[in-house]
Length: 129
Image (cartoon, rainbow, N blue to C red; front, side, top):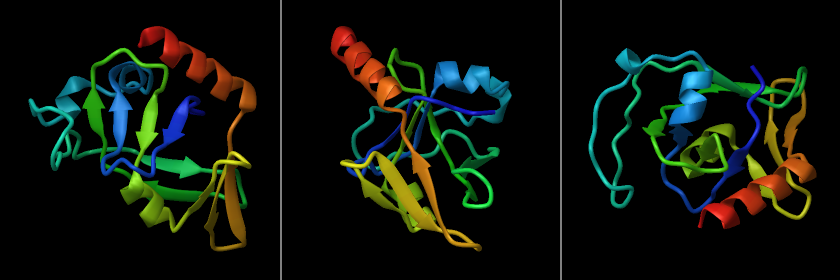
């Protein structure tokens, strides 16, 4: 399944999957470990059993396992990928070019953003604030 509205936050130490996206993926609450906490300080993962994620398109794609915190707050985004996932990808982010590049088995892979989708997310975030 193609997931849009993913933000890469190099300042975040945690990977977040928002509840709406969690439900759209067909995952169920039983897959989660309950944790009640604020999103400050060292977070604990909420989901131990998780599906792999794939960034980019074949043959320049990379698949890895990511442990997400599932958060039930209104937001414009579906997923926030933090430093830990970027490190696992060995990825480099270019905000100017709206791309993440990372090595794959074949060659350098990339995941690009959709400028229109980025603008919509920004406007939605400003409206929610």
